[in-house]
Figure 1: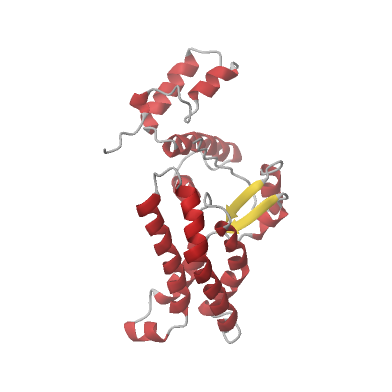
Figure 2 (figure 1 turned 180 degrees about the vertical axis):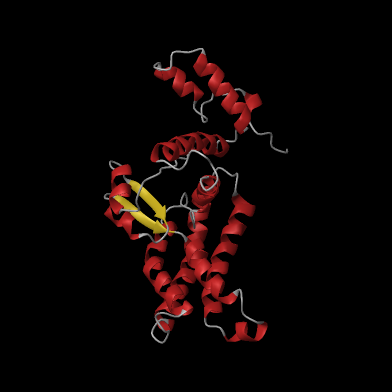
Length: 251
């Protein structure tokens, strides 16, 4: 399966940036609750359950055992945990099978859909009495905004419950830009993003990053870069990539 990781940098968080970057794209778009993505046309939105879960976790994580028992946020957190437990079971029982995504779709409809419905009912009921500016009020408002679109992940077994994979891919870049010398300018940030896009795509396709970069530089140095077939053969997902560049997995 072809897997690509592309890191984009922009000077602002304007929705026009997402609109421009995704121009011509049609399909599923999974993000956090940032409204700027609403400008993108011809896409099906789905959100990230990890972001919803985090809002409730931040409330209950600092509570004493007694306070936790009385917290209305605990129920919301538990709904998230139930959904993630189903995802864990699916990975453990079906991942690697030819029908993994089809099985995941069927089981989600059977097990996850009812939980998501109860979660929505809980949010709609609790938000009536919650103080809007309280931590619980904010968590409920965030969940109420995003949960209707979370149902999208029930429509296709290929979709994920969250965008943690994207978050993990971009994390090294986010941490590093605070310390690197050349990310103080737009050009420096763009160059860093380009390099990290290559590195993270190599990781996503099961390659040893250092070995792949050496291979890539050696091939390109001795080839005519304008030849598209050469570039295609160098892509991390290409079948032409030597086996010694791949991460060895335990049998």
